[in-house]
Image 1 (spheres, rainbow, N blue to C red):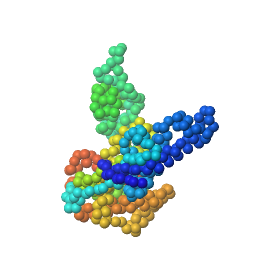
Image 2 (tube, rainbow, N blue to C red; image 1 turned 135 degrees about the vertical axis):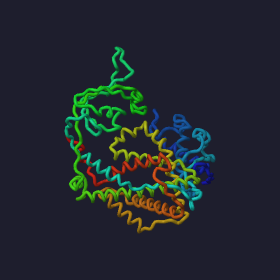
Image 3 (cartoon, rainbow, N blue to C red; image 1 turned 180 degrees about the vertical axis):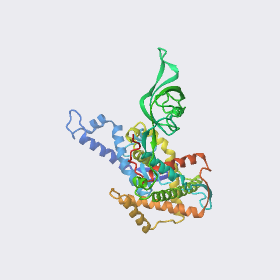
Image 4 (cartoon, rainbow, N blue to C red; image 1 turned 120 degrees about the horizontal axis):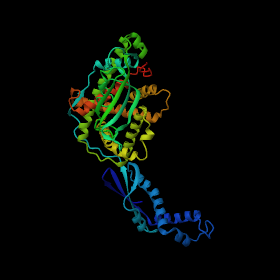
Length: 474
């Protein structure tokens, strides 16, 4: 079988595969024999239909199309194997199918044009001697106090307030009713805000709760007092009907309570953690947050290095790899959302998935470029990971996943990739210059992202805390 190769854009190899007259005829005859055995035609017993009747009823184009499909299924894999092409993904026919069917004449030479994705060629720019800047994240002792105060709030009890007006931090029980400030009904009555009313509603009087000015306006009220507040819904409010709309709320304060917090002592530490003393709990949190800051700084350095390297990277990504990476991105997003309690079946619908895939494409492409760049650097610099290191990391991971089903081959693959990536980043840091700058000094967006990460880590990483304690008691 004669095969001619052609290099195509987007890391594809084009194939011109010549089908001999004998093969083209045999494929056509084979399809006719298969139809003759299986097709039911009125007036004829199965398997006894004359050839000319069968061809007339089915049509030559249908038979030729089936024969072509058989030829492609048979010849394309053989062509790739014959030419030792490192193919990834499935084949793609080049040209118009109907035109190919029309050109196909059984018993005559036929050329099938196809394309297949192959692993891309990676051309690195400068990756040694780079100078980059990265933000240094330092441990903030105030985070320990913040976490402890959050846990105190969870264990707080509510006690009635007497002989004073409401103040910031109190918990109020209110009736309220809201109307649009500039809209009326056909009868001339003020139009009520949908869902804008409640009875004996519990609300904590802290800034930022609900609409701006709502809770702040209750400060200074006394139980039994009724007050009218004029507020405006934010322009970016989730409900478009309410966004930017001025409103009036009539609020009656029914009852006022304040939080009574437990003492910050050893008893508190024992109740919220596995530690016997408050000092031990503080030490544990300080260690966790210090390690977290160091890990974030390392991540920032790695990010600065790889972004500088990818900026000079030349690579054409095959569509097969991009689709696979998009699948990975969406899978990771689904797992994260599921862990947060989101019903992913309602989010990942058939209608939404195409849009989500398109939005995830830039991220997938960037991740692929970074991964390919690191692999190429490791290859050029002969960076490898020893079997001993892999086995040690496998054992460590298996201990963490005790009781769960694990594919040992997949585990070894993931562990090897992670270790090689870490080792390559370490090599880059040794052979480049990374200037550390204060956190938040490079860009406001990075600072915002880092703050979100820190906030999530406070909740996720501090495993010593018990999240099952009821927040408030009346």
